[in-house]
Image (cartoon, one colour):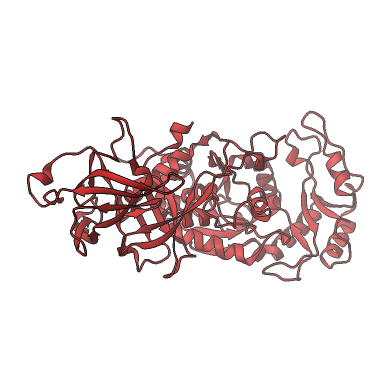
Length: 555
C-alpha cells in the first residue's frame, strides 16, 4: 500500500493539474559551503532527491557561495561526498558564483527602474532605521539618490574604489512593511576577500535573498523548498522575481517545511564550529557530532539515515525528534546487515579446570542469523578464556542470570560451565575465575545435555588467539534535551562530560583483517565500526549504538 502524499507532494500534484507538466519539474539542494552537512540537511537532501525520483525530474546541487569570509573548497568537497554517500546523484553541479555577472546586470536593471539605491550609511545606522515589528522604519537619507548617481556609485563599488562598509546596495521597497525583511533589504556589500572560485575578480558580493530566487529562475527550478525560518523571506523572493519581469508560467515557487530538530544536540554550524575550535570535539567528523561525516564515522549507514528521515516525514510545524528514533533506525538496519562477532571489553580471565591442558578446538557461530545464507564463522575455544568482568559476581541474588559460584551458565556457541572458585589481588579485585564444564553440553551437538536449559548465556574469547582492540564508547554530546533553548545560558554548559570513554579489550581472531568502515555486532554489547584511525597493529572500534535503548530508562 502506497503511503499518503505529504503536503509538498500535494502542492506539486495541484500544480500539475493546473498549468505545469511533469517535464517542467526541477528541484535543487542549495547548501552554503561554510561547514559540514548535518542531520538537519539530510531531511532537505532526502526531500528534494526523493521528489526527483518520484517525478523523474532533475535535481541540482547548487552551492550558495556568496560569502567568501566563511566558505572554503574543503566544505564543497565534503558536501559532495556526503550526498553521494547517502546514495543520491545530482543532475547539474551549480554555484551561485556562476551567476555573479547576471546578478550584477539585474541589479543595474533594478537601479534603472528606481527600485534599488546605494546607501552610504553605516550598518549600525541602517539597522537602527529598520524600526521594530510594531514601529515603522525610517527612510535612508540616500534613498532618493538619482538613478545616474546610484549607477556610478555601484559601478565604483564593483571596481574596488570604496572601502568595506562605506556603501551597500539596497532594494527600494517599503520601510513601513509589516514584514521587516521588506524594509529596503541589502542586496550587495563590499568585501575585499578572496573567493574560493572567483578569486579576487569581485569585491562586491550579493546577499542570500537577492541571489536565491534569481538562481532558482536561471536554473528553471520549479519548486524552491526551504525550511520554515525562510517563510518571511518568501515575500522578498517573489518581489525580486516580480520586479525583474523575465517571468512566465515556469517561475519558481518557494514552499516551506519544518526543519529537523533533534534532541540532545545542536545543529547550528556556528555552534558546531565553536565546539571544534574550543576542543570539545576532535573535528567535523567526530562521532559525537550530528554532522553526516560524524554519523558516518560513528557507524550510521546511508539507509538508516534515509529510513529515519522517511519515518519522521515532512511536516508544516516544527517539533523536536527524539534521538532514540534515530538510534532505532540504525539499530534496525545493522541488525539485518552487520556480521556477529564476540569481543570482551572489560576482560577477566576464566579457566576451565577440567578442560584438557594444551588442547583447543574450533567452534562455529552464525555470521548473521538474519541472513542464514551467509553461513558460519569459526572460533577457537580453549581452557583459558576472557569473559566480561560484569558477567561474574562472587555473590548474587536470584535475578542475576550470569556466572556466579555454584551456578551454571552457557558460553555462547560452546559449553555449559559452572562457577567453582576465584582469585583476588591484594586490593580485592578478582583476577581469575575458575569453573568446570560439561563436555557433553556442546551447542549443536545434538546430545541430551546440549539441550539442557540454563538461564544465562555469556560471550567469551579464547586468550591465546584473542586480538587486542581499542574501543571508543560514545554517548550523547549533551545532557539536556534542548541544550540551546535557553539563550541566556551558554549551550556548552550542558555538555556531557562522559560523552567519550575508551576501553582496551579483546576480540575473536576473525577480525584480524578488518578495514576502516567495516561494521559488526559485538554480541550482547552493541554495534561497532572500524575507525579510520585503525591499523593492523592497533584495531580501533567506535560504538555506534547499543542493542537496546538505555536512555529511556535514564530519562
